Image (cartoon, rainbow, N blue to C red; front, top):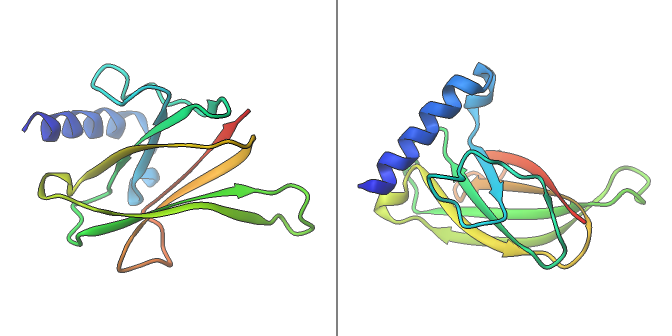
Length: 136
């Protein structure tokens, strides 16, 4: 119950601080510490090599499916047409109390510009949320 209340408070705060068009998709928040009530709104974009990257995915609406796919890819500047390289893809099962959000962490060991996408497992063509961050 506390988790649901926490997610609703974060959603309300973000609703009043973001443009209207941003809510057609979900929201990704990154942090260097496990995400709690105190640090949920301090979104970070730059991480060190080998540092844990904690994230919170907030869905645009209640997800009816049981699985989501989290994909991270690295943007490669040396490619002639702006290429990218998939670094990590993982499917997560959503529990009954996690139909509006998902939180976890990962670690990257190469510097660069990264993009994270979250998909509904039944629609892998259109991401629910997309955001970027840097590892230096």
